Image 1 (cartoon, rainbow, N blue to C red):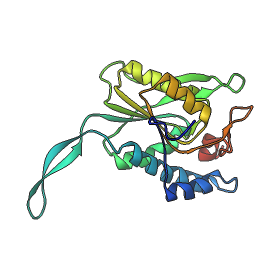
Image 2 (cartoon, rainbow, N blue to C red; image 1 turned 180 degrees about the vertical axis):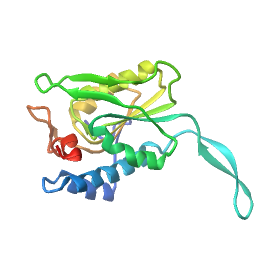
Image 3 (cartoon, one colour; image 1 turned 60 degrees about the vertical axis):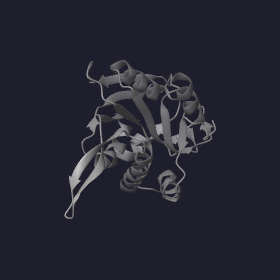
Length: 211
């Protein structure tokens, strides 16, 4: 899957490349792994939120009153449990008033299909923008279920944020959800026979939570 697809945004940044090299290493300990996830999530979120809607507001500085811009509408981060939790903190720092809604999905190791086990999204009053968070976009199964759930809620704008993505997962999402933008730090080679991303970084959830 080419990164120049208008729907797919592969982050091109020296800091992203640096932290990705540390994130991938088998020698990186859990505490350092979490820090690299936070840094990469910050860079990714800054790119994904570049065009959020704003409205004019009046601010009084120590010198004079000036017209500025502030975010408008309700914005949500939607981490896919459990690995997506590692991406939440830096985004709440960027957008302190953001709503955080959780979706629990895990991959059946035999079928590689997503299994939903937690969903507390309300059935009315949807947010304006939702960012699905998952460090790894592999087959796209869990992401697909999450995006479909948010669209059923009535969210008008949904985007996907992942640290590392496989071409197979990107292809699935671009076909199923042509209006959903995907933001990723790296697009890797492929999935192996176990549906793990190659070269990838192993199991992001296990490495974040040291399990």
